[in-house]
Length: 164
Image 1 (spheres, rainbow, N blue to C red):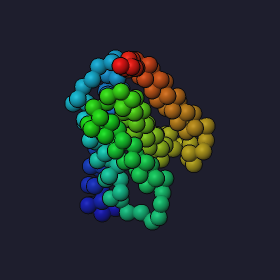
Image 2 (image 1 turned 30 degrees about the vertical axis):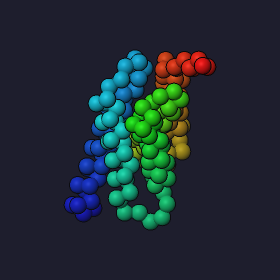
Image 3 (image 1 turned 180 degrees about the horizontal axis):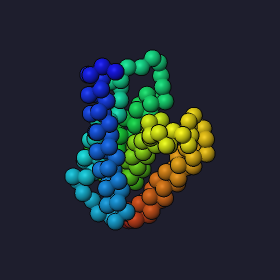
Image 4 (image 1 turned 120 degrees about the vertical axis):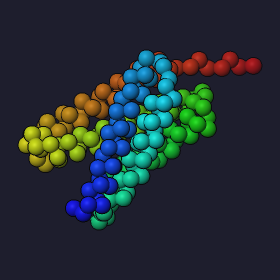
């Protein structure tokens, strides 16, 4: 691996980890019904940068990573629009919560994939990522995100406006 690619990879990983960490802080605040523009914006910005920088790696054809990157950028576009342009008004609040959680889920999904590829003891448990430890880990992550999504949507439900 060339020095330039190594540095690019390290920056990409660092930004990804910042986005994931900030996303977990955002999720905790979401569950507590509190808003922190700093953590929310850090999460969104780092996650957008992670998705964009993922396209800077050499590749031959479409890979699962490319597909997740494209989907993530679309979802992040909707989340950003809901937060900034619509100020999370009305149904845009639920739209923001769902799309931001999906973006964070994609980050964590990729983190699990990369962990099972790069961490020796995890790779030994699931060398082809078709084994039970990998599947169970991904299932647990998915269930966790669905639970946070349901709780968050219930806690952030806004009453409908009365008809005039």
